[in-house]
Image (tube, rainbow, N blue to C red; front, side, top):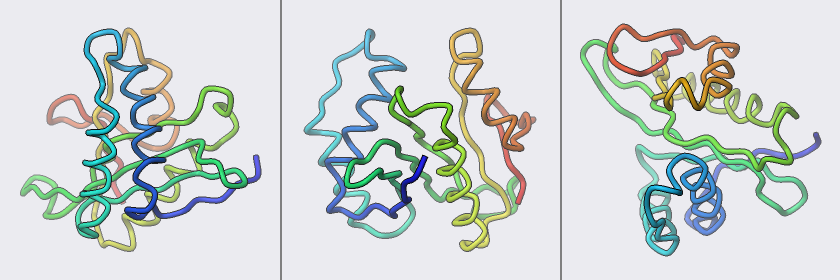
Amino acid sequence: MFGRITKATSEHSDEVANLVTKLLQALVGHKRDIDFERLVSVSRKLLSEGDGFHAFLYQVESTSIGVITVSQSAAIYAGGHYGVIEELYVEPEFRSKLIGKALLGKVVSFAREQGWPRLEVSTPEKEHWQRTIDFYRREGFVDNSIGERLKFDL
């Protein structure tokens, strides 16, 4: 699939929020109302701060079809600052076309540029989201001995 990955700015807030809304609908949509306008506002605020939260969009022509967000965290056990993948979503009709892999690769490169020693990701329930967990494992993430996260040492 031919496309490009763009680092999102506050000008992309609607696109980021739209894709995150779809992710939330898939994960918990049946359990709660999702306030799109609030997500746009939060997206704009986080992307405007320019520090600590980052989003990357996969775009085909001018349409965003995938998003990954990562934030900086810090912990003694992790050796200081590290990255946490917060959201990853690809439109269903574009899945299994290596777009998620490309987005994840972009975040791995970005994490290295930041000097983070590792990335972590929280995983959803295994019984419903095994395919997601398998994706991260194929990409080199391993079980973290601290809680329900997978990690990727850089």
